[in-house]
Amino acid sequence: MAKTVWEGDTSDMEEQATRGFFELVFDGILALFVNLGLGFWHILQAILNPSAWLDWSNKESLLRFVYYGGSNELLFVFLDLVIVLTVIGFFHRPLLWALVRGLEKINNTVGRVAAWAGLLMVLQQIMVVFLQSIFRLGEINIAPFGTGFTQSVGWFSESLKFENALVVSLCVSYAFIQGSHVRVDLVYAGVSHRVKRMIDMFGALFFMLPVAMLTWMYAWFFLWRHLITPKVSASDALDRMLMKSRIVKWNVETVSFSANGFNGYFLFKILILAFLTLVILQAIAFFYRSYLEMIEGEESAGKYLDKDTLGAGEEAFEGTH
Image (cartoon, rainbow, N blue to C red; front, side):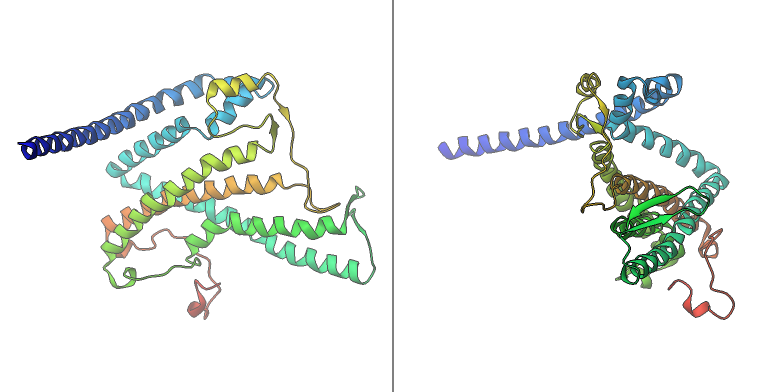
């Protein structure tokens, strides 16, 4: 008798657990569609009331901008825009190709310009070593047009880190487009063209985009914690943010790691957001390109791809520079 009762209790518990699981799934799906619908409402509100988040002379507008810049609301606004463009592109393929070419053009242009920071870094390092070791200068004055810019040698030496960060953060998507990134192929190289494109789509949709978007939401507040005071946090609700607007003021981080060193370390935090923006744009472009190349077949591989070349006779080194 006891055994029968125990078995009945276990059955009821399993049934309740199953029912609870399906209720959670249903609630999650419902919340997803509700937030996607609200995303269109937030787009409309942002367009109709630009001063509510762009008029930084009003401290509430500034804090509202800070809050929404790393919020769930912005995430669903972004998803709404991507979904709309994707659905239209599925029926009008030239739109997707135009998006691919435009997004890759942005990343290529930014990367090609930022790559010159590598040359600047080399020249600056030579200047620092030469003037410090030979002339024993403590300060360097640069005044090519009569207006001087004087900083300590330590400042110029530490600013090399920023120029290196420029190359790393702004050239990452450019390197991805050019095929210069490092990848490890376990099964990818041996599968068909169609399977490769499906793997690429999966990687862009479930690895590149989620990681970049999640990192953005925390990097955004990491930046603003060093631009304004009192400090803001990703866990702050909008009401709490607006309460802080009464005492908020600019407090841009200008500390350095050493005396008279580079004092613009808040710029590194801006570079983090720039890096994430380029990765998100490239993830979208890569997903669209992979889809289009899968649909149109192997002959479309590399279509409209703007890749650099080393010149005639250097084909063997393409993709390794």
